[in-house]
Image (cartoon, rainbow, N blue to C red; front, top):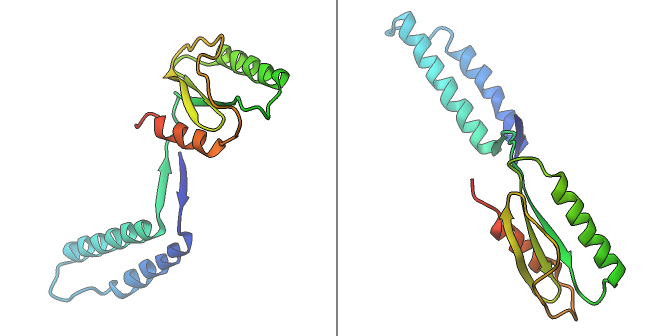
Length: 152
């Protein structure tokens, strides 16, 4: 499990928890000891959750399955040998994938196109998509990859 905070300085508000506990030690004289403890516990829990929300907590759980997009630049700026090396790398990587992993391929130059949506045991031999190769637009490829990742 991995925990991140987008605004960690809000965690300093945790000092308020100690302050509330200190003030509430005596509690309200009209409440029984049990009710005072429950009231204190609820106050501390609510404040803790509020502080964590303000800090922007993000909990990431490990996953066994992965989805990978290979982005292949097929513009004229990439020579034939480098393009072949990239395709060979994709083929080798696909063979090494574990059970449950999925892979997709996006080719790009001026525009980006999905060559293959993410799937298990993807077979890749040759590129089928033809693109206008006079320009390189990696941003379009990254945006297309993000848009095609499966939602969990």
